[in-house]
Image 1 (cartoon, rainbow, N blue to C red):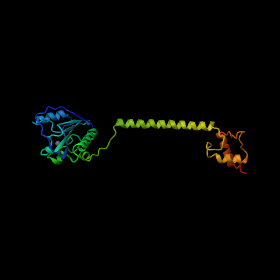
Image 2: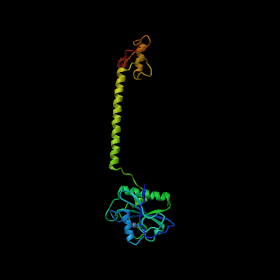
Image 3: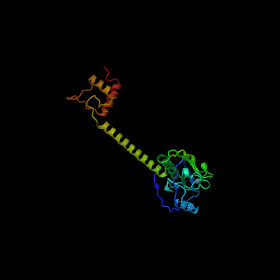
Length: 245
Ligand SMILES: [Zn+2]
């Protein structure tokens, strides 16, 4: 998570905040605006400058507002015990869904603040502790309060994953094909000289029976010199009872 430093021309001085009981969530009530826009609106109110401590744009970028340790100007009567996070957008009348990137950043920022600064602070919407409808009826307040952000793949990530899986599937198919060819090579070129572990299990009893019967004998070194086809033949003969003593 990255927090972008913003330079503001403050009008006046801040007073330090001694406690932080709440992390208060707001919306800008403006579909498109920057942290500097909010700063100038708040200065126009006669305030020191931007009243929030953080401003999160729809693309998920997080900007500093006023210093984190000072009293803000975002919720009447509660500024001395809270930090304020404002989201770009109008989530009361104009926009019914918050972009994933923005939601993700707000959740990360809340987690960051709780972990590093205010472990006991309660996350609330402005309207829960002040006379306001902010952050708007469509703001995903419960989701953010419960930190239940679920990762949704972008189309780009989905396509990337899909092509990776397809590539791997193609590679597996290639390997299977090579394996099949190798099996063919083994079946046509392998010579089985001895009735041992190298010989396929299905052939060994038949070869043994043929040896016991005396039908199958090795050369002067005892090598049987059997091909795969020979094994099939011996098994067939064995099944026909040709090596029954
Ligand atoms: Zn608000």
